[in-house]
Length: 102
Image (cartoon, rainbow, N blue to C red; front, side):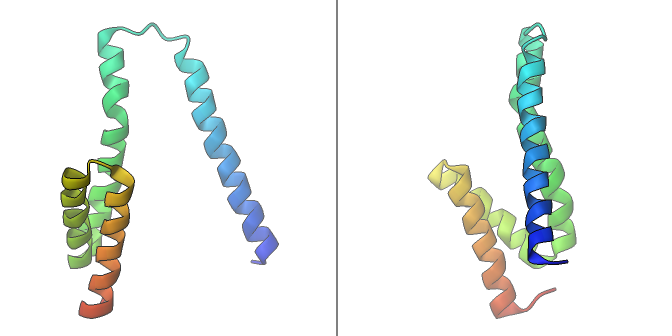
């Protein structure tokens, strides 16, 4: 695959992602917002994140567990998700560099 093809694929994926998000925001405007619906939407992102992280952690071996542990601790201390994720990724990279990949 050439560089231009790869960039085209990345751009297409970005467009689809944006269309999905914008479409969801547009469509939710037509849904009556009961307290139950609001609670569902509030916790949906966390549920999706857990559904993505848990299988990757289990398959990832020790570095996966280290990365998730560091990310959780960093999230509790820093109270910010993005730096916590970055520290988790760094922890996994350092584990692989010094302890070897599983």
